[in-house]
Image (tube, rainbow, N blue to C red):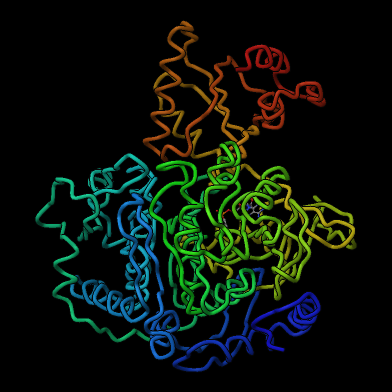
Length: 635
Ligand code: WTA
């Protein structure tokens, strides 16, 4: 039996027990047998969760791209590493073999070097889902530059904040992007962002939509001519196990976004291991994750995890609704996809449409279906199981976070029996705990509490860029010596976990984490707004939608309110991006507050959910009278 590839439930339990009994030898064996190291580690794990300081495979030397590319050239050089499926189905798909990927990454890495990028420099990547995106991540990793990918749906302001937070020297973008039947002027957004980013000296521009764009001759360079001239081979820089590999921003419930830092060796081992087991990838399978590489799911399960296993990974540029709602299934048929990984919000959007959109395609290649990003509701689970998996594909409901680097709790297909809405069991090496509000661990089954992890795992983020104290405070101060996830969960009578949702002020909308504070800050920038509060309310497709309660400086006339609503959403779009727009905006003269001045979001949430029968005790509020006004004015 190999610990690296679990094949049945009995093996899972054996491997799990071993991983808890002796985590170090467990992770040592996996690292030893499945990766290419330039130098072996001195110590598998050193940690102190109070600080917190964690290092895996200390002393080891490696380059992740040698593991994702070079070593496969000898055994599977002509195998397709990346399939690129464009937005427009009439445009040909591209198949990039491991040999070709090697050459493209090396050329790109040489371009970075020629432009003065060196080990440790931060490079911001703001690209659509085109091959250059995956190649640019790997090119950074090749030379030890730290990539910071910003999802290409974020606004110029959000982009600038992220560029400045990590002092990026360069940004890689494109002349635009396709999204369904629309084009988006990415370079224009970059130009606007860079008005406030003095540290960026170079902008590399990939050509995608052939639009006329302004190039600043001192700063902007077309990528392709540089690639054409660059040498086709590039020696990989030897990295320390704990050298940062990338920064990826995630929203916090307060303040500015958190630049989560992932390091090299542990992240590589963990994403590769979890990819292999959660998707049960076999040598000639075609694997497709529909996420954008701008999110952690894309980093770990489009790029690093699959490529470290020599897998064929599909990158899709388009959207599920273009040219029609059959697009995902047409791609599955066309490329004979075996593992398909998507988000509940996409499943719900498709489940609303006619069934023939999926019935028209041959989905018989599918073996495993995955879900990630938010709890999957029972109805969506069954729709996915019946119409896509035809009841023969296990559904892996994978729970994890940007901070965890890889999947933490998930069924292992063909091993763990699945139950709708349950992420089921922890993967080997993961030790979850449920805690009550006093920090007591709830032992046994049939309990629910705050989800923590009580032992380090290789894929965990090591810090927040430039703010280790915030890292400690956010994740390691709520409960002593435990990583606190911010999620609530229950453990059922058989030990299965079900994630019940966030217990902080993060709201997940269409699978994207949004902190309430940054949205409120944006709204409060509007000159007419005095104060605001955002809560989530259930939405059939998005999971949650945003409801804003806004106090205006002057009450104003109601006919102006429609305009104000538009302006408020406009401000949010400018500060964050269209994903954070509010579905409902209610103007009110006050917000329910405690005597210490804290907004009682619980009450606002109930009102937004239209569940006003059980508001609980409101007499302790500073201003209980405002509650009735808000109930009556609900939109
Ligand atoms: C939520 C995405 C329930 C959760 C990989 C978590 C989930 C947050 C699931 C992290 C799931 C993710 N079931 N909830 N299977 N997967 N979540 O950082 O609240 O974008 O804390 O990482 O998404 O979102 P993030």
